[in-house]
Amino acid sequence: MKVVMTLLVRDEADIVDEQIAFHLDAGVDFVVATDNRSQDGTTEILERYEGEGRLHLIRESGEDLRQSEWVTRMARLAATEFGADWVLNTDADEFWWPQGAGLGERLSAIPSRYGVVRGAWRNFVPRPEDGHSFSERMTARLCTPAFHHHPLSTHSKSAHRAAADVRVGRGNHEAFGEGLLPLRGWYPLEILHFPVRSLEHSVRKYVTQFVALEKNAEKGIPNHMANAHAAYLAGRLEQFYEPLVVDDEALAHGLEDGSLALDSRLRDRLRQLGFGQGQSSPLETPVSDTSSRSDAGSSTPGVRHRGGDFGRLDVAAAAQYAAESSALDESDFALALGARIEELESRVALLERGAVTRVGRAVRRGLRS
Image (tube, rainbow, N blue to C red; front, side):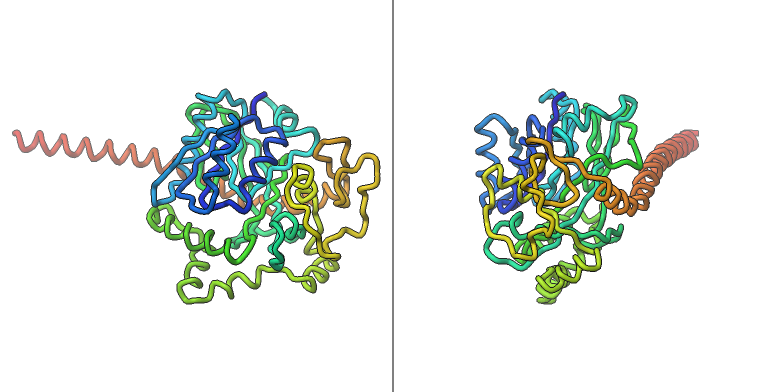
């Protein structure tokens, strides 16, 4: 089985090297990436992987952000040019954690009648900046999910079987195409998500992207992004960002009331790949350290590891993941309903065009007579 990952980026140098290296280690065989006007060193990182034969790079100079169009193009190339069996459509802040031996094993278990399967975001909260990389600082994960317009909202993303006619929806939340029947209500892939990493990153994410989205505004702008941009224009972006940051006191309270959990899986995996190696806060060291066990590859409680694989959640941790994923029922319904509405709108548009054509013919016949 060949797994191809698509990646659309703009100025993500603080995370994109780790993202690509992680997924190549996790079972991705090849990457198709689109770089949209990066100026922070992202392009050079992509070019290095391209030079190694691991990545196909598309340079997109458009000032607007046509995400759905550009990701659809990459997903189709994955099917037609790069021999994919499955395609992951990812963002730079996502790490698709497969559990078990890797992504290929996980995806091979999907029944053949289904062409789309989903992963669920598990959001990591920003921590005070201390000079270390995002993965060293951000080991606190939010455990109170909700489907709402917020930087730390819960959502799902779609992986799909390779298809030459696939169309990827906005945000990579859904994929459409012949034979791409979605398997709903099950989220076999965790997506470790780092959507807000620093104040400087917030400027890139919520200002630069907003300006690009504004050029394509007919497709809608997410509320939280519009709110962040409004805060920036009013000189209050720092006030928008600060409430998202979890300091040591807030972390202690969150661990006590269960709204936060410590999850060092990505940090530990990236250390194995040569990234990070910074010092963690004492609060970020899990109380129950299982790293001395022979089957442990991480210090995260609730995750059982065997050898070099990606671990499997134990019963308690799997139950917590299921509870968090239940918040996706609302978004899953919206995705299903949205697809149906889009189909109906297309049919109505065809009918309307047909009616206009018939009226036009009738008018022309009347004029000739």
